[in-house]
Image 1 (cartoon, one colour):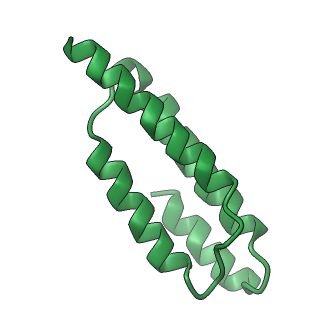
Image 2 (tube, rainbow, N blue to C red):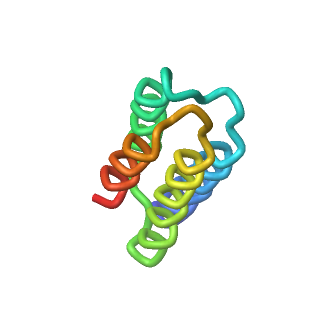
Length: 88
């Protein structure tokens, strides 16, 4: 039962990462607010199994990096700052 809950959490987190990758309404002006919303949603989902942890974290990080790198109107310097922040 507990393992199923962890697996459901992994699926929810992977779905969140996939939805972030598809976002079209994010701008340089609302990036920080949206990032905080996603981080809150991520944390509210809960734990995943250790066997899926790295996969799930990499999907989330990759989605955020993809989004930041695709944003128009952000200077290269600001993009670089965000990408460094996301590497942590």
